[in-house]
Length: 205
Image (tube, rainbow, N blue to C red):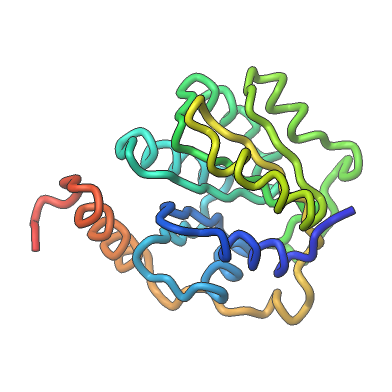
């Protein structure tokens, strides 16, 4: 079973409050922008190549009072499962690592992932020592388990797998956020400075 891609993201957006969000390059960026149009609380990481959750780990480590949601497609996850060693070692209680598992390379015309039906992402995370692992393949299950998976990680890092269908052809044509990297950086960084009192940039405004 799998959740329709848009429906899964619509649900997460409906439960989103003050979390800092790091969508990964491609489909997650497109859908999060389409649904929220948020230009400050979200760092639309481009060309992240399996590094989005490590980027999110750095933010969560540097701003421990912020909750951070970091997204990653399963294609990117398969490029760098070693990230879990770092994330387990840090065990940040304010980081939620979300694997968007649609069993395809969404950024390259939905080419099938190798071993697609057998890949067990929560099993891989548990083998790395992660304790708080969750997987959801229906909206009902996601709704029932949301608070525990997304709000209850004060005891350590949470690893969440969302089994989603590939994007529809219509959604795959969605535009990404109309900002270049420097603008995204400054909008997000200024939001963190204002909200959490962190000095990020040398020149304050």
